[in-house]
Image 1 (cartoon, rainbow, N blue to C red):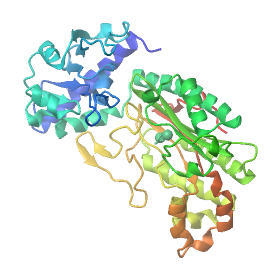
Image 2: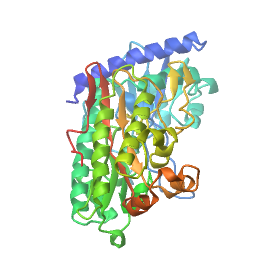
Image 3: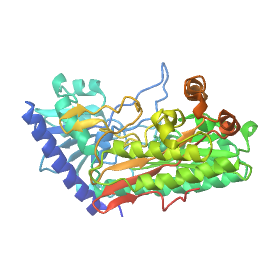
Image 4: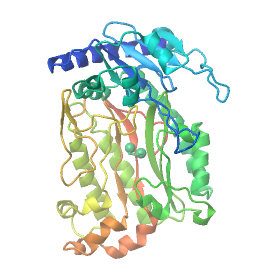
Length: 446
Ligand code: GLY
Ligand code: MN
Ligand code: MN
């Protein structure tokens, strides 16, 4: 349960991470006394008085789940965080503070009515670095340019975001509970013949989210649109009912995201496709079992390609052996994304390619440029596992016209391609006792 005690434990973890990060920065020649986290600044559409939807800076949200712009946290090792909540006086918008929440008694909380007022409440910023995405705000606060998000500090801070406290895991689980309710509603609407729009609306209602509250735009794709990895439109009745639905939709809890995908088939879906969906679900669970401490995440990605090759061969889409399809890179045309990514305050959380706490980069393999994490897994890491198979013309055409064309049954590809694609995605914590799936028990597979 998310309560003040759990949040206090989280603050203790953050204090350790902060202390360590400042030590790393000092070892690299940057001596600091603390960090000011700024929630960010409102932006407006061009020549308009309407605001771009606001999202607080993730590093800020990690300290305090406060949603407004211009708010600040001053974090110094061994001291209670000083939170300045900025709420301008206004009668156009509701600026009243929310009801007392679990976090407010665990920090030193001050209220302010403007950014400038907030800076006064914060006090002296000597030797304090600024993290907050808006450089102009740091300049207005008089912070030297070299203390704005310095690399020597950002590297260890980003690195530690990979290690989730129990509070963060509970937040992701809470987001998953909401998302799963949305997925159930979406599935029912699909099976009742609903359109992409109707499925999207059912999802939002089930997840109890407004449009701007979901952590990423829902992907609600019927039939061939399932082959567009981040399909963004929502078609109406002209494209309903569907034979297959790929829905990739998340939810948020105090800024933490869940990221779940399911693929559902209607009774008139092709039986070969239905069986492929079932098999992708089976191999997804095997890949989830690989989320264990010390394992390079790339190993799970490599295993996912072996499994996908076997499914393609089993379905008769690939002629000959799965090994040959794998060796010739055929699976990459059917499955062009990575097997998953770190998950947290950002859906694609930071640090996936980081070599270590001091920075550096481990690039993904040349043949798999879309792999979003190359880090070995550790206890507390939360990642998604999301293998898929898609019929993407743009990627299949070069194979069809290339030297290995005979390895694929193109008649079968053409017959199935109006079903779009398959993806199954769950959210997993790496623990000393093995993988802990935060989503699977909430929303069943196909
Ligand atoms: N929802 C985007 C992704 O699964 O990575
Ligand atoms: Mn994902
Ligand atoms: Mn997703």
